[in-house]
Length: 104
View 1 (cartoon, rainbow, N blue to C red):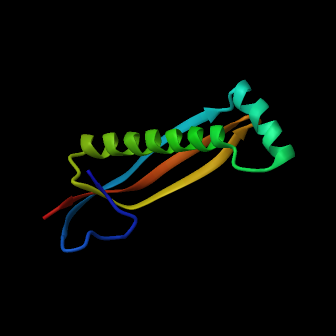
View 2: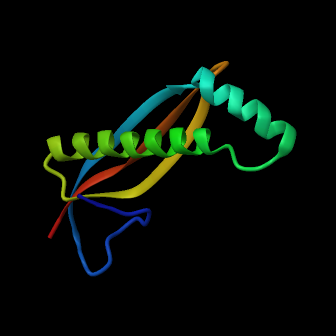
C-alpha cells in the first residue's frame, strides 16, 4: 500500500476516491515506564520507553488504516496524517487518517 502525505501520487493519476480511512490505538502508560520517566524528569533526557511506546502505537494505527484501505480495494492512501490526543490521565490516542484511492 502506497501511503503519502501529499494530495496526489507523483507520476500517477487518481482514478477513484474511495473515502476516508482511519486507524487508531489508545495506549496507556506502563508502571515501569512511569518510574523511569520520573527519573528522567529529574535528570533530563529522552524518555525512551515513551518514545518506543508511541512509535509502536503510530505503526499500529497506520497498519489499521492500511487494512481498512485494502478492504475498500485501494491502491494508496493520500493526505495521510497522524494526530494524538489525551483520552484520560495516563492514556493517549494515536490516530492515522487519510483518503483511500484507486490509481491508474
